Amino acid sequence: MAHPEHLEILNAGARVWNRWRQQNTRIRPNLRAADLKGADLAGFDLRLAYLSSANLSRAYLFEANLSETNFQGANLSHCCLIGTDLQQAYLADANLYHAYLSQANLTEAYFGHANLAKANLADSVIRQAYFGQADVKEADFSSVNHLGPMQLRLARNFELAILTAKAPSPTPLASRK
Picture (cartoon, rainbow, N blue to C red):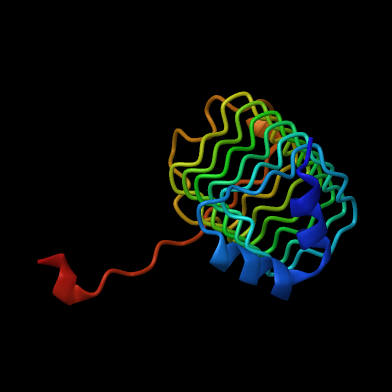
C-alpha cells in the first residue's frame, strides 16, 4: 500500500515533489498499488521509487526520471514514457501494452514476463535490457540503439516484433587505427 504522505506530496505537483526528493535523498518513495491512472507526472523525479502493482495506465510521464524504480506488476498500458530515464528499472510482469517508450533510456532495464505488445520503443537506448519471456508481439523496436543480437531471443512473439535496424554511425578514420 502506498504511503499516504508520499501520495499527498506527489499530488502537490512536480515542483513540490522534486524539491522534497532533493531534501530527502535517503527516502525511497512508497507508491505501491497507487491509483495514478491518467496522472500527469511529466518531469517528476521518481527514481528509486516503489511503484509495484500501481495503476499508471494512460499516465503522462514525459521525460520523468524513473531510473532504478520498481514497477513489478504495474499497469503502464497506453502510458506516455517518451524520453524517460528507465535505467535499471525493474518492470517484471508489468503491463506496457501499447505504451510509448520512444527515445527512452532503457539501459539495463528488466522486462522479464512483461507485456510489451504493441509498445513503441523506437529510437530508445536498450543496452543490456532483459526481455526474457516478455511478450513483444507487434512492439516497435525500429531504430533502437544498442539492440544486441541475442537480447530478444528469450522474448515471446519476437518474430512478430518490428525490428528495423538503425544504421551504425560511421567511424571516423582517426579512430580506426
